[in-house]
Every structure is written in C-alpha cells, then in structure tokens.
Amino acid sequence: MQFNDTINKNGLIQALERKTGTQSSVSSAYPLLDKTRDINTALDNYNIIANDAAGRWQSSDDTNFIDYPIIYSDLISGVQDYSFKKDETGNQILDIYKVRIQDQNGEWHTLKQRDFQTQKEEVDFVTEGTPTSYDLTSNGIFLTDIPNYSLVEGIEVFVSRTNSYFVSTDTTKEPGIPNVFHEYLVLRPAYFFCLENGLPQANSYKVALYGEDGKSGIEQAIRNFHARRNKAEKTRLIPNVQNMK
Image (cartoon, rainbow, N blue to C red; front, side):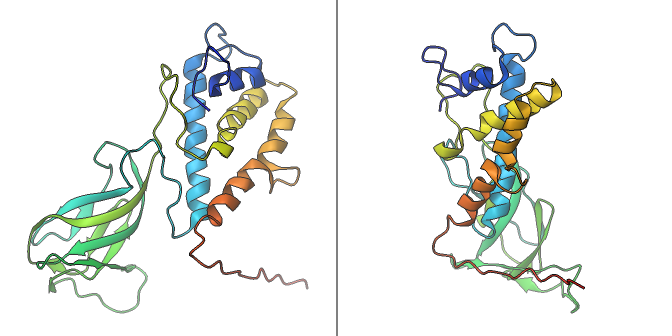
C-alpha cells in the first residue's frame, strides 16, 4: 500500500482518513503532518515488536533500504572501544547482534560476546593481539584484547536500525514491511486518534490491535510472524511453571 494515493484513494493516508472520519488536506482535526508522524510512530512500534519476537535472527529490516543492516568500522591499533550510533546513510542503530574482526591475514573471526560486569572471573584487558571477544554497552563495543594492528573496515557489525520514514510529501513510497501488515500502520494511529477524541470506533480498533483478551489481534500476528520466520532455527519451548498453592 503506497503512502498517499489521491487518485485511487488506496493509500495509507486515505485509509486513515476513512477510519478517523478526517481529511488530510483540509481537516484541522488531524492534518497530514500529524498523520505522517503517527504512521512513522507505528513503524517504530512494529520494529520493536518484530525484533523482540525474532530473537537472535534480525528479521525486520526495512526493505526500502538498498543495503543490508551491516556496518563497518576501521580497526585501530591500541583502541578498544568503538561506538556505533548511525549507519552509513544516517539511520539510527537500535541494537548490535554480531561482531566480526578481520585479522592481519585477512581472515574474519566472529567475536564472542561477554558481559564484563556480571561474570565472576577477572578479565585481562592488557592482552594485545587479535580481539576474540567483546562487551556490548549501549551502542558501543569494548574489545577484551587490545588490537596491535590497524585495518581499514576491519570491524564488521550486524545491527538493527530505524525504519525508512515517510515525509508528508511522499506519494508512491510504500512501507518497508510485509504487505500483510500495512494495515497496522493505519490501525494503530486510528485507534489512538479516536481514543483521544472520544470517538466510538476506538473500541473496535483496540480489539483489532490487541484482541478481546489483550493477547491476540494484529500485534500478536506480527509477533508470531517474526518468531517463526527463521525456519532454519529450531524453536525451543520453555514451560511456564506456576505455583498453585
């Protein structure tokens, strides 16, 4: 579904107009700029749900991007900490999933993630050589070993990042998420608009989003889709044991 289809009336904006009873171009109640902002907020929320459900496999990168969610940084001799706030095109980095280092022979090595704050054994931070592990702190990594060589783009980082957002002047651009969930980008803004304005359809939109029990609806469908998307990774069921006494 494209963003704004003023001819055939099949865009996200037109769907949001119908659900809220507003018009983007003339209504002061819900102008186009506000609709655009709320659709982008729904994109952010979709990303949170999808990445949380996907676990170790990053499955929700926006398909509008022409590159993969992999960024590179120069490895610098004597430098242990590296920060990753944005990718090469300025998109904010949300999480880091995997880190690889290139050694002096050109071979890539996947680093083991360690939590220096909670592990019991002491960590020797003065060892020099090819790094073998790292600590993840916010949007940065801290290498256990001090690299004793420099290498251009010697660090490879697999990340999740913010979506490709809409601007109010967009027309044919489509959301970079699966087509079956484009409705979510309309339904979520419509629910909150109607809720804030006391409109009666808010309750039906709430049920569509979360289900009658608060655990189904389209948000649960998004979770299920991304949790099952990586068919190569086996799903492990963990029993929920409750004390009934």
